[in-house]
Image (cartoon, rainbow, N blue to C red; front, side, top):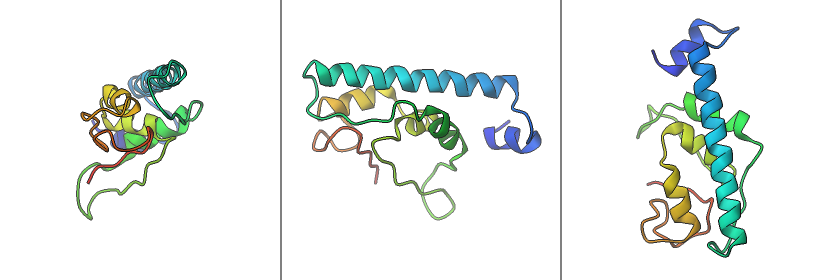
Length: 121
């Protein structure tokens, strides 16, 4: 059953499974933010600005997004506070670490942009 369907079938209460999934993604997002902050403080990144504390909004948004390409799918303009949205959409957390270190393997900018600026053509 899809996430959207689970929410639509029970508008007043989330299932235990969905609640745990949301919680798990929120914790993952917070841990990732804390790691990025640590990297910045240790000099492993030139710039950090993020969204710790915004997981409760961003995770459900990421789960509800109609992912795909073209006019039949949702369009997002993500910014530095959208890390939890990306995680919920299925992004690999290691990609955020790559972007922080400005590596060529960063899938968003190939190491040419500040951390927290996500882009996929």
